[in-house]
Image (cartoon, rainbow, N blue to C red; front, side, top):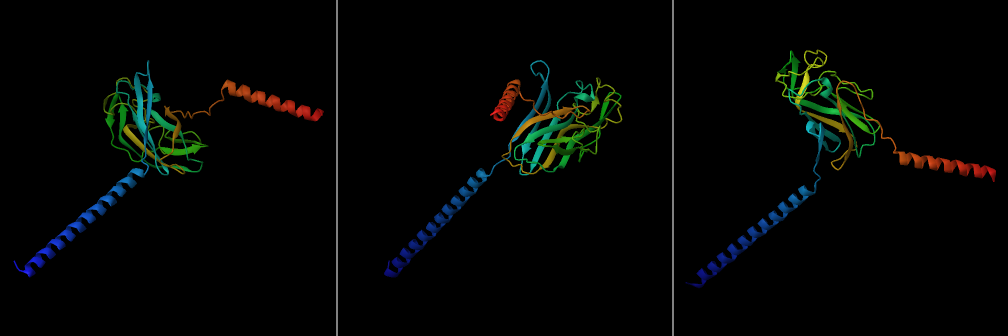
Length: 258
């Protein structure tokens, strides 16, 4: 092998080595960028769903309602299911007609319903349910009184819903026999149709973020608006308050006497 061939061979090895080094460096940089992207994605707060559950009966044996309530950036999303079976449905008083709640971050201001939908609806007559299809929008409304926010079809706080007293959320499949349904359901024109299956509401609520927390979540049933009442101070708190007022009155009398 002559000198020129050796030099070409050496040069080829050097060039190949540099090319491999550049490839490894590119792959390393790509891996770093990918890692940073994953890390950033993990740092973005994710909306967490808080469960909703209402049960009755001995030992909470019957779960009437399940669902979720989720805080987003400027929104609250609620899903509801009435879990009663066809046979357990007796009266409209078992139907869901509203939700009340409080959420951190909300400091007042307008509340509105961004969207609402129900997987199915049903008309019930002569003890038999007939499916009437999905409903979007549901005819419910949203609003507030002070810090208490509501989404409702039977509404308090002077809120008017396009639907109501129809479009309450009933249990069962919506189809077939509702043998035990009384006159408030079966053949009741003002109360039919009913929503059935999963119903979803998204509410515009200023100030709410994915880190917001819920409290005082109350499910309303039936065709009468029953908003939650403000909490009453416990007797001990009231006694302490009274003692403070008596002490203040005594201090005022002593001041005038001196």
